[in-house]
Length: 135
Ligand code: YOG
Image 1 (spheres, rainbow, N blue to C red):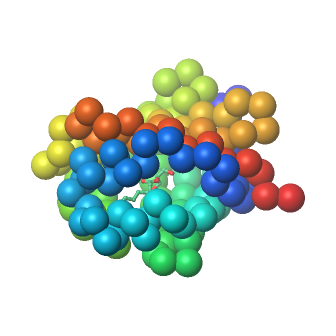
Image 2: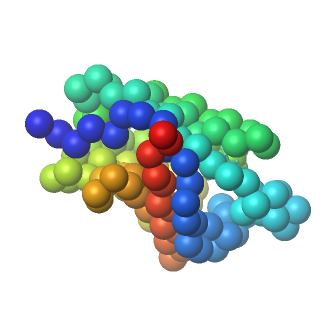
């Protein structure tokens, strides 16, 4: 049985998010808004099919994918880039590589206790977001 990420999650801590935003060339004003946001993640998981919604009062971002199937991702409302994305299982971690203009780009999700972890990487920037389950 793979890990089950389903549910609604609320951001609790967000380390080095601004470094990640800088690596994506997000401008100063947008960075200041972005780092002030309370983010929520809504995950729907059916076997290896996923739907991730990242929600905020400023912008939302939706991503649907199947593990093991490469797809074209347009990071609409984020940095607005086109990448080739592939999500795979590495043990109990869900690992995405986003091939495109930016090197070393991707993310990893895993569970620890009742928390959802997300590591976001771009170039040499690594951001760690920890979410708690919404009651
Ligand atoms: O999540 O790829 O869970 O897609 C964080 C990066 C801020 C807009 C969100 C809006 C955003 C300006 C998505 C934030 C960086 C900042 C709410 C992370 C770019 C621009 C949408 C992500 C994966 C894994 C699923």
